[in-house]
Amino acid sequence: MKLMNRQIQKERRKELRSNATISEKRIWKFLNRKQQDYKFRRQQGIGPYIVDFYLANKKIAIEIDGNVHHNVMRQAYDQRREEYLLSKGIKVIRFSNDEVKNNIDEVIRRILFESGVE
Image (cartoon, rainbow, N blue to C red; front, side, top):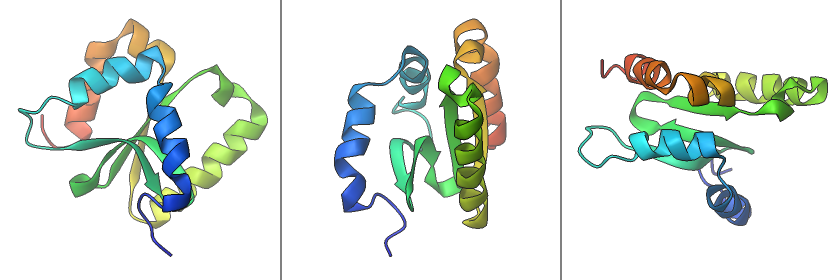
């Protein structure tokens, strides 16, 4: 089974990119800068899951969580998903929409730190 960007997920990944949240757009504006020495991917398929952002050479997934992630059912899904990603050697970093909205500088600093850039 193909691990990255499975064909069956193509339309869903496209839909997620087209309907990005304000927080995802703000983070992507920073992560997509061409002058950086690393390349983040947006809405990256990994096995049966799609992560918001992915830094392949460091195996880091970044998730921006909205209010839906406070739901008990969603939290159980997120836990299974994170366990799967960890089993593939991928570290998951989570931020809430509120963190991005209220403290984007700290969110960016942490992403850079976790990525080994800072």
